[in-house]
Image 1 (cartoon, helix red, strand yellow):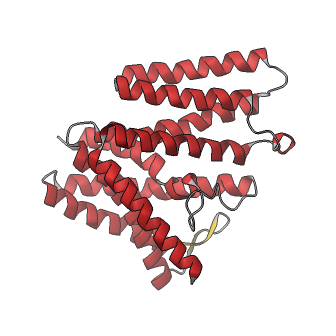
Image 2 (image 1 turned 30 degrees about the vertical axis):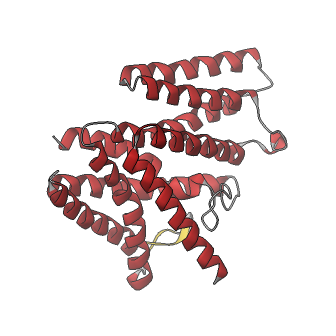
Length: 269
């Protein structure tokens, strides 16, 4: 019972902090996302680091990753231009290549790939929350991310508990069911339709974005589970009591935010 209360209380605090940041946007949201990105990147690097280097606090390739993430966010805050962000991502790749060559064979190709993948997987994808928020109708569109992910997750859990019989991917998540997955998509779609109609963005358009986002969010969740199982860890971290780390709570959000950004540009006028 105490564990459940901890989970509920930490969730309430998380929703309140995130909600305020999304509402005010600007530097407040930027700061929160930068913090979550750096912590999430730390969790990712720690999870996928080779066992023989597990005692190291940080590696050279990881330093490039952390620094690159910070620089990317600074460029995003000061410019926000998509071309500038693209150049920054390429610049991080070039810098990692430089470190890889200079420090070879101390750092092998796996560490080089993990370092760069972590920046894209955690920092860049999560940054789309900010890019959506500062865009046209961003104050309304940004909530579609969480309809697609957290509403989907809630509905999937409820439907799964009530009528779930067929396992979705038992090797990764024994408790997830096909019925729950379908229920999550339907639930997110329904809420998306109501939200789109209420805000005037278009019920059908937002419903489509929410439905696609809900499907992608479940793959994001399962991908994070696959990474954890591949490296024999239960949680990515302990930052959020009762929930684990940033990647445990935002595993579906990070990829859904990118999908929402793309679809909102295509479907919302």
